Amino acid sequence: MPAIIDIAPAQAASATTSKLLTRAALDAYDPASESWQKQFQRRYTHHSELKGVLNQVEDVDATVYNKFAIAVTPYMAQLMDRDDPKCPIRLQYLPSFHEQTQPGFATLLDELGEERDTIPGTSVVHRYPRRVLFLVSNTCATLCRFCTRKRMVSQPTGSVHKDEIERSIDYIAANKDIEDVLLSGGDPLTFADDRLDEILGAIRARAPHVRFLRMGSRMVVQLPTRITPELCAVLEKHRVQMVNIHINHPKEITPLLRQRVKMIQKAGVMMGLQTVCLKGVNDDVQVMRELFMQSIEMGVRPYYVYSTDMVEGAHHFIVPHHRMLQLYEGLRGWISGPAVPTFIVDGLGGLGKLPIIPQYVKEELLPDGTGTTVKCRNYAGKTVEMPGLGLDFALPTQSN
Image (spheres, rainbow, N blue to C red):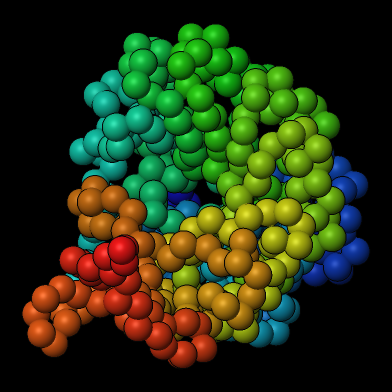
């Protein structure tokens, strides 16, 4: 989908305006009443359109649209607080004046070095020895303002062509060491079922050495009606073992989402949760506790909490490292163990995913220098010393 350049009101009143829902229509709208394709066509793609359904919508200038488009599904618009500009859903999707500034790192386009690790002629990012990232689409249902891949998502020059996808599958098939393939984008679920069937089928047929086939999608959350019995049949047919979804706030977990998640699970697919730590959205212990407990409650295992990537226009979302450590401390020991995700930062330039973990266990030299001891701290701050885990700790000899 091309980015919108002209933000004049006349431009917003385009041929698609008739498909947009008014406030009254949005209030009465049932997302399950029509196909996901029709809902996709009803997306709001300009902040002036959103003024018709929300109050206190911030004005932004053309520089924002020149860099990154806007797209909001009716379903996501329903979840937004009508009057509160600080609504955690609104903050994720509505453009802000912050995107018009460029402090320091803000000009970075490929801050994670994905293009450096992309195999020429393909859309495969091969950074780790036995797993690859396969970018199959440049389109999403709703565009996150903190998107890592702004350089390609919503931009026509970033399209992933059919020939490129074929060469990517050829590469995966030819490299027998590749055991793990992650389909991402954009969002793979923006493809029709038959196209997904072709891509997944080709991977399974031509690369039998792939042991773990998974998919990352936020469309499950942004447009839950995309999950249909037909799609689930495709996932089951090609043994897609895992679908990771992206949720940042408990408000995004709705009865409709729970229903469609269950459909995926009934197809034998494991589900994981990825979250981005966003200032003003979820940088709060109580919010995260509720998010991860609701997630594990519906059988979706929290996997990663990402530090906001240093991408252009997202600097106002970044949560400091020390605060992320505090958030982690507020989870471990306080909620169910399987509900505690790994906090990570994606290193600049392709360094990879690096864990953000408080130091609960520390090894120290013994006062006499004969070895080391290990000091441990639990979630409540209680400590204990365990010299038996230290270096050169001598076990007592057996008595005669």
